[in-house]
Length: 154
Image (cartoon, rainbow, N blue to C red; front, top):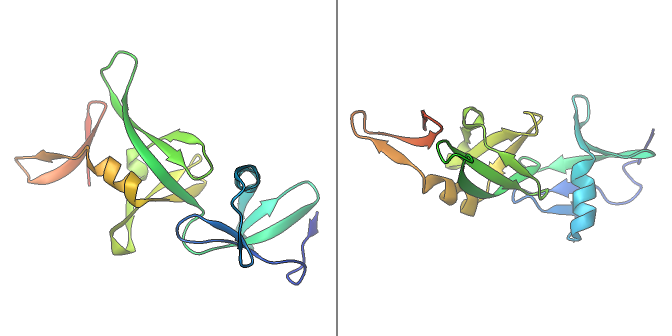
């Protein structure tokens, strides 16, 4: 596999809002962004890398490579169990594993996605959509997200 040398073209970069860049130019074409996400991997020695059949390129990431763009509460077909669906910056949809939620600096909410291979940062709208579902446990004064028959305390 040929690695693109550092001086050969602009570096790939993902900013904290999940926008992709090649040097100073934003990569805004949806199919190109999808291709990059589909080929994004993590290499313990090099960090984030986009790998294709013929070459690989290192990707500098300001925070995390994925953003949660939308959070939607849903119920199973019987209407009994509540769960949360996530739309990610690669246009894929995943079910939120509430055990994978965690807080970062500045009260930023993150979760693990893609079978725990990556972390994703909640965009402000997705964060607020999730928080609309918070309920209060009046006995403890703590807040939780209902899911299935469980209460996931934050």
